[in-house]
Every structure is written in C-alpha cells, then in structure tokens.
Length: 102
Length: 102
Length: 102
Length: 102
Image 1 (cartoon, rainbow over the protein chains, first blue to last red):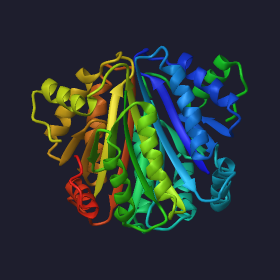
Image 2 (tube, rainbow over the protein chains, first blue to last red):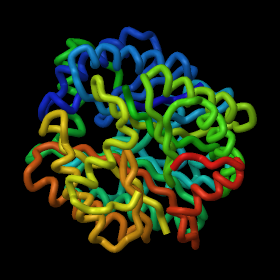
Image 3 (spheres, each protein chain N blue to C red):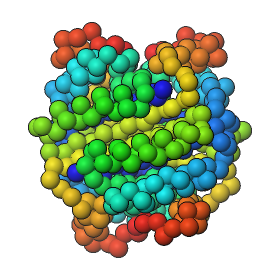
C-alpha cells in the first residue's frame, strides 16, 4: 500500500485555479479510495496502480482545457501496511504527547 | 504570505522514523506559526523567512544525530493573502458542493 | 508530452542507496525513452502513460527487497510540445545570454 | 553540505514563464555556488544557509512582479560529504557500468 500525495494545477489560467482543481476533487471523491484533502495537496491511499489511476483521471480531465499543467507527487510505500492515512498522524500525536493540529 | 509544506526524515535510521519526526513536530508546535499536520507532511503559514526558520530548526535538530536526511518542500506564495491554511480547503468544498474529507 | 522527473529510494537500507538506485537507472536506460540523469533525480520525456510505466517498473523492482520506499515526482505537461528535455535548458541559456552550467 | 534542487515559477503569467525564470538563473549563476541546471529545476550545493539564501534571492526578485509563485524544493543532506553535484551521477555510472545520459 502507498500513500500518494499530489497537487496538480494549470499554469496557463491565471492566479486563481480552484475552478480547475475542484474537478479533480470531484474525481477523487468519486474514486472510492480513502483520501484527505489538505492545503497543499490531496493524499490518497491504495495500491500503486489504484492511486495513479485516479491521478491520471484528474490529469485527463484537466488537459482537456489546459495547455500547461504542473503536478507534484510524492509517495510513501510501506510493505503490508494499510490504514496509514490516519495512523501516521496518530503516531506523531502519541509520540509527542501533544494534540497536534491537523 | 506563503504556505510551506515540508516533510523531512532521516534515511539512515531504518524503516520507522517517527522517533525523529516527532521532534520536528514539537518544534513546529512551539513555533507559534499556524500549521497543519497531514499524512505526508506539515504545512506552515507565514512569511518566507518565518516558515523557513522553523524548517531550519527542525533540520538543525535532526542533523545532530542523523548522517543523511531527505527533505521535500513546496511553497505557494500569493500576494497579500493570509488565512489560506483553512481557506484553500474551504473554497474547494464550496466549489464542489461536497463535504470533502480533510 | 510530459517531462517527468522522479527520485526513488529505499529508506530502510541505511545511508548509501546507490546499489538500489542503480537498478532503476538500468531500467530507465533500457526503456528507450529520452532521459537525463541529474544529481537529485532522473527526468524522462514521453506521454504520461509511457513515463509512469517506467517509474512503476522501477518501483516493482525496488519493492522486491525494500520494505519502505520514498518517491518524489514532478511533471510538466505542455500541449503538443516535445523535445523539451533539451529545449527548456537551451531557452534559458539563450534568454540569459550565459553559458549556464548543466 | 546539502544538495538543494528547486524549481520556482510564477503561476499568474500564462503558459510561458522563461522570461521570469531566466532572472533566477542569472542570480544562481552569480551566486558563486556550484550548480547544475536541468530540465525540471536547478541543483545547488552548499551548506543549508547558503543554498536557501540563493533560493530566497530568486524569490525576492520574482515576487516583485508576480502575484502567485509556486516553488518545489528537495534537499539531500549527507554529513561531511561535498562534491556530490558530480559524484552521485558518477557513482551510478560506475555501478551500472553504463554511459548513462546526463
């Protein structure tokens, strides 16, 4: 299982891009995969093919009407570990003994 | 104001690194800057010098006992816009008309 | 066409990982896609499916004997533009009028 | 010593941004730090303060006339190791026994 975080946006549409990014969020929300939207990207959990398939759907939609698109992704693979979308943050809360802001 | 997301971890300490990452979270939590911890990194809001200063404190602490450290950062600068740690996510919830998971 | 840059390494193998990364480079070199190896990652050019297929082959090989793997990718899509592995750097050399180091 | 790779561009200036990025390259080239320009970013070598100082100069210049700027950075710290701008690539060439394209 991997956690894949990605942010993707057109760079030819001016300063505000939320009208384009919102379509990706609808695709992600419909995908059925566990995810978390954050201020700088969205994190999906699944096997590598599942998470990349969702990212590619977002790209296919965005490239219909954008001439230039930037995307940053990072993934963290850990053998045989699922449920990490919540677990990584919980571990850090426990280990710091703090109610960290999430 | 910028949003800076970063993840930083030692790569010479084996598979589990939360004992090292937790020290960064304590530094971030003590910094006084608005932040959000997510599954793949932490997002800080402030001016460029403020957010980089916190990242560098985390690095200074981690390099005390790690020989190799990887860090990925991305920042999003938008002139004269603050409060985006919450606002970017809210905009996407409104524009999709969905209760997106965060 | 996209330019995809990625770096991928095991994080459970200690400080030096070139014995693992070298296998990815052999896969990339055999892929037939145009690429450039740099100090912080490798850049491939092709359509989105081609470049991700090579990345996934590298991941499949690395996950055979690594329990935890980190990967950072970024891609730059520009409609109908190929040959950018060289062209982007050339443009900057011309526009600065400098023999920039590459 | 760290290797810092970064790419920084305005996202409010339309599809082509090389007229903005070229100013960063002039700053980098004038910095005196060892660097390598690649198709998806520039890699600098130095201590953490040196490399971030150059990145911040680029940001200061770009934010003079851009309202929104995206930047992706990654760094690789390895204790007591310099000369890695060349050495990492050379190691991979030797270990694969191939004349990898750079």
